[in-house]
Length: 73
Image (cartoon, rainbow, N blue to C red; front, side, top):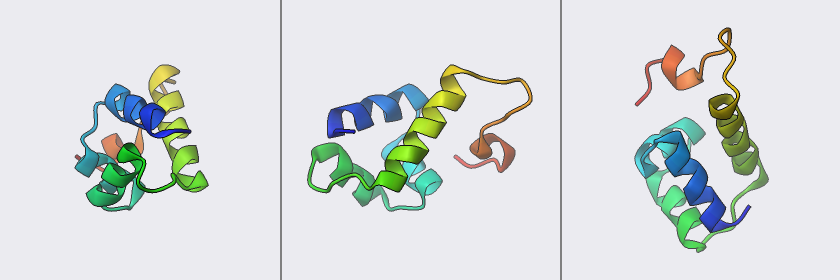
């Protein structure tokens, strides 16, 4: 995953850098660094992003996003 794809996924999720950082347990600065290409995106972050994207694109009425269950921003 490159930085442009990372930004596109974040935007399609409708999350700010700060909100995505909270979901991924990283700082907003780390999210900014991934998006600017200053840092490589770790594989575990890529997997989480793709999971979030798949939950949004293929919603299952029985499965809710974790941020909806826990009322995260």
